[in-house]
Image 1 (cartoon, rainbow, N blue to C red):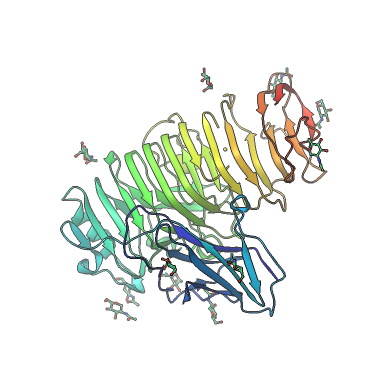
Image 2 (cartoon, rainbow, N blue to C red):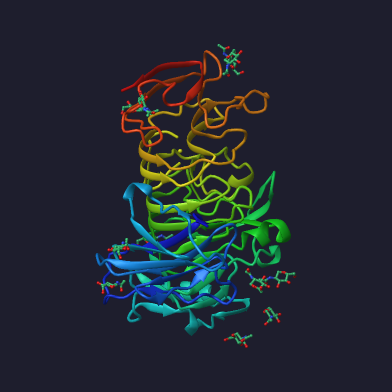
Length: 466
Ligand SMILES: *[C@@H]1O[C@H](CO)[C@@H](O)[C@H](O)[C@H]1NC(C)=O
Ligand SMILES: *[C@@H]1O[C@H](CO)[C@@H](O)[C@H](O)[C@H]1NC(C)=O
Ligand SMILES: *[C@@H]1O[C@H](CO)[C@@H](O)[C@H](O)[C@H]1NC(C)=O
Ligand SMILES: *[C@@H]1O[C@H](CO)[C@@H](O)[C@H](O)[C@H]1NC(C)=O
Ligand SMILES: *[C@@H]1O[C@H](CO)[C@@H](O)[C@H](O)[C@H]1NC(C)=O
Ligand SMILES: *[C@@H]1O[C@H](CO)[C@@H](O)[C@H](O)[C@H]1NC(C)=O
Ligand SMILES: *[C@@H]1O[C@H](CO)[C@@H](O)[C@H](O)[C@H]1NC(C)=O
Ligand SMILES: *[C@@H]1O[C@H](CO)[C@@H](O)[C@H](O)[C@H]1NC(C)=O
Ligand SMILES: *[C@@H]1O[C@H](CO)[C@@H](O)[C@H](O)[C@H]1NC(C)=O
Ligand SMILES: *[C@@H]1O[C@H](CO)[C@@H](O)[C@H](O)[C@H]1NC(C)=O
Ligand SMILES: *[C@@H]1O[C@H](CO)[C@@H](O)[C@H](O)[C@H]1NC(C)=O
């Protein structure tokens, strides 16, 4: 059998504890995988059955070789497998229905309680999912009286309404905790309408003008997006660092967004680390992380699975549908770094990324406005496999200019044929440098567009290949 849609997330956090593997309890609302089981150094891990792929969320000790055994529940033997990233060349053995391999990595540790800790249970938070609880919000509000205080969310299931992360406070989500969006309009304040989708809200946002807000830990932020979009007909950005400075995010798993899940908006000095966004592949417009009108944003060590854009940068027209709640007029977008992850605008660097599977491996789609998309770098990106198509494109590379509303756009026939399509003589694709592009594991770099399978080229200038 093919065990490719398999994700065992190893959290990477600089805090050390004793040498153990931590598998977080599986919340009662999720089922175990019907496809595989996983043991780490002999200990059974909690698998989670999901939408088109299953996952395991765990942390482990730094640096030690640790044995992973994945066993198929349904097949008597494994005949084929992939372990991503392929460039790590992780060796595995197959014994019957079991695949085993070893990994070494850093560790993660939950913070302890103590001074400046505000435990949500002390504020009456219901951790059994029986109702929408206000305890989490009350703990955050109480914590806001003391700078650098920590709101501690222990394991359990919390349905919560809109809530605002206050100035200079931290939200710690312990492994096994789930903050869940209800998907029901009546539980939330409507903030915007996405004209082609639904009305929506900002679920978890920062206070305007705040500094040093942090979300960390190994809990889960569950957008309940499938229900929200299709039944509740009410969407949400799940996490919105907005008009904030020094925001940090490290560790939690974010799943099932109903719309662009994480949207740093009009903010400065924002960092996401060890980010795992697991959106469903059957919910439209469920982008992973969209950096909007912000500067000095870093997305490091991230995996983002989404039917929509995994990683994207955006600017938006003032006070128009989704931008209605933005506190300021359009702000510049610059100094954005995506490292150890991938996807695309001006001064954007995508570095050391792995495209595990995509319709378009790397791309730039300039569709609105007259400003130049410039200085975008894709550096050391492995495109491991391609499938399906996105708006008619199925290729490892697609840079194109479209004119929205005029019915003109590139036509894609040959699948997996790259394209560099400008629009006309005043909207050209200019100054694209290719270097060290290795096709299909060929160790000789491609020297021509043809060798890079870029077959459709129109209105371009100064394309260089080294
Ligand atoms: C797994 O076992 C190896 C060998 O005993 C040990 O060095 C390592 O720390 C263990 N890893 C974990 C995460 O427990
Ligand atoms: C879990 O399994 C039960 C029993 O098969 C099923 O009714 C339920 O829909 C499943 N829940 C999820 C979230 O998959
Ligand atoms: C595969 O099996 C061989 C023989 O038992 C062993 O030496 C090797 O370490 C195993 N490799 C992995 C990656 O588990
Ligand atoms: C859930 O927790 C709340 C508060 O702790 C309690 O009042 C309620 O009875 C619990 N509900 C269930 C179904 O256990
Ligand atoms: C949930 O909370 C609402 C409002 O406080 C209340 O009317 C309702 O009875 C609660 N439901 C449950 C199941 O506790
Ligand atoms: C959402 O609303 C539906 C219909 O009123 C209700 O059955 C469901 O329990 C609500 N969900 C939550 C999480 O409150
Ligand atoms: C947040 O805290 C900083 C430093 O204490 C302060 O300068 C700023 O005004 C505060 N912002 C808000 C919205 O209270
Ligand atoms: C692109 O980079 C060059 C050199 O750093 C700089 O002069 C130019 O202003 C940048 N262009 C844009 C649109 O940011
Ligand atoms: C290119 O297309 C745009 C939009 O249709 C148009 O305004 C512009 O005049 C065109 N330029 C040339 C050189 O044809
Ligand atoms: C490897 O790539 C080089 C450069 O594109 C090309 O000339 C050569 O034919 C390729 N070899 C194979 C086996 O495809
Ligand atoms: C290139 O542009 C010309 C003129 O607009 C058009 O006829 C042709 O179809 C274009 N080729 C591609 C591959 O889009």
